[in-house]
Length: 40
Image 1: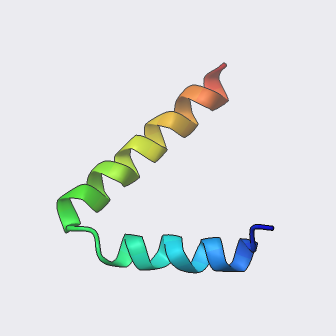
Image 2 (image 1 turned 90 degrees about the vertical axis):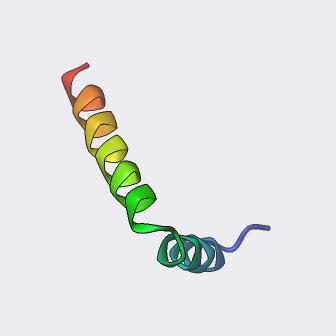
Image 3 (image 1 turned 60 degrees about the horizontal axis):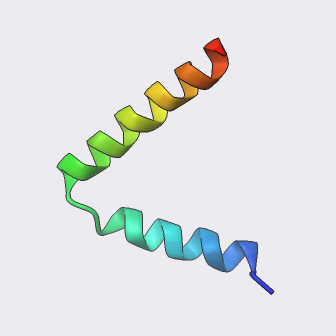
C-alpha cells in the first residue's frame, strides 16, 4: 500500500533538488492548470 506521508516526503525531496528554472516552470504550469480547471 502507498503511504501518503512517504509520497509527500519523496515529492519534497525531488522538489528541493530541482534547478530553480524548472521550479519556476512547474509553478507557472500549476498556476495555469488551476486557472484552466477553474474556468471550465
